[in-house]
Length: 143
Image 1 (tube, rainbow, N blue to C red):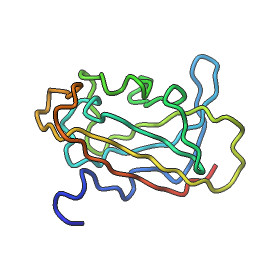
Image 2 (cartoon, helix red, strand yellow):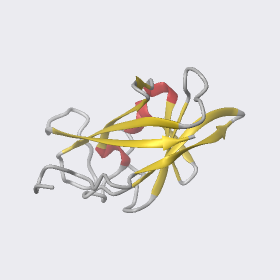
Image 3 (spheres, rainbow, N blue to C red):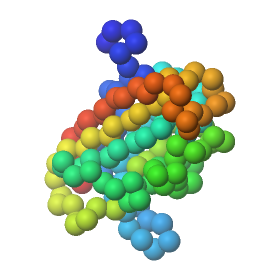
């Protein structure tokens, strides 16, 4: 991969298994995601946006939660998180509601991540003064 073309090592970031999880009695589907970001010393809010697509269907942000160390953070709020860090090679989960039941078998998972180019490790860029980097993870995952 050419220098500067990526802000992560995408291979192995997304799990090949879709599992289930539960929060307050509500069931969710889950897929693990491992931190292989090349700039891992940033708060979660450095990831300005995460979009999750299953089998071509974009999951609404209000239906996706980033789970790290037992904390569930809604994707719509994640860009504001400046006091939680996701450490290199640490596993987290994307927990999501799906409009219908997923069938057993293979599913195409796409996760688009957008990060700020601001490299100050303790600051976020809510005013979008710095350009954004985009990268897409794809995986065939099995339920």
